[in-house]
Image (spheres, rainbow, N blue to C red):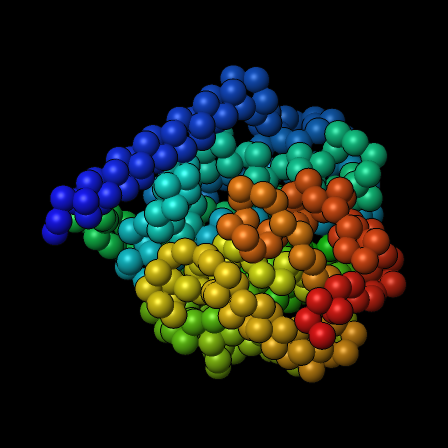
Length: 393
């Protein structure tokens, strides 16, 4: 290696170290501010309406073995949203060894899933987008909510304690307890919100994958009397030929979860299975940006072993998105679609946003003159339509 290349390599390493430290500092600073002043209080015996509360679950467990809790808000008892949170995925030992940290995100290093709930993660779960209660633009402001948080890397369906080697070579255990957490969460949901008439089962990112996997259980086991049920998956496309093997042998999911997986598109397989069983019992919705900068990086890692997003892989993802929409429409032509081309400078790496339902742009941005908030509000009231299909024509 010549001197110039050696200097460039050393500069790159120093840059990564600096970005990593800066990212960790920002995350820790925000976390401390939330912990000191903004942390949601624990649910009291007599909760008030229109207040976000935290509910620790004794039998719940985050991926690294730390505490697990969910968030709830009491409002209109007839309208309930069960929200399945996102936060990445671990599908093998390599990804299990690389959880998300602020430093890794800032440095652009591989980071695949959140493995715990810390003060910082509150800003991703409540008081933003569909969960915002501070203004009047959110049409779901007066709904009751249970936010099933996510820190297990298993699409909310895992039942395993998985040993793996860390990047440092140490042996750790990733607790794929997403399904146990889900069951414990739904006990709380049923106790607080026993009989809603209108039900929205929604999820973003990893939670988007989980919606078709868990919607049947939510309705059959907890809310069979709900007459108006809508499902929304926001950004749930990641092709991987090993999904069935991962679900069965790594997450140790039950048979009803892994048996319907027949292709590299786990979300599509679960929706096909769900529609075969329930048909028009539900309204079906899917949303995505057309060149998702984050999911395209995951796709790049699976296909090319390179965790990065650029214009080439974003174009690949665009074509996969187009095919996904076509196949959802083949399940039922009444599958409502919302596509967008929203970008956020310095964040989306030249691509488009990753998820919108729990982001400020849920109400602030529009596609073809329609916000995602308006589209979703219309859908739960029975008016299902498509937005943004011209982007993939």
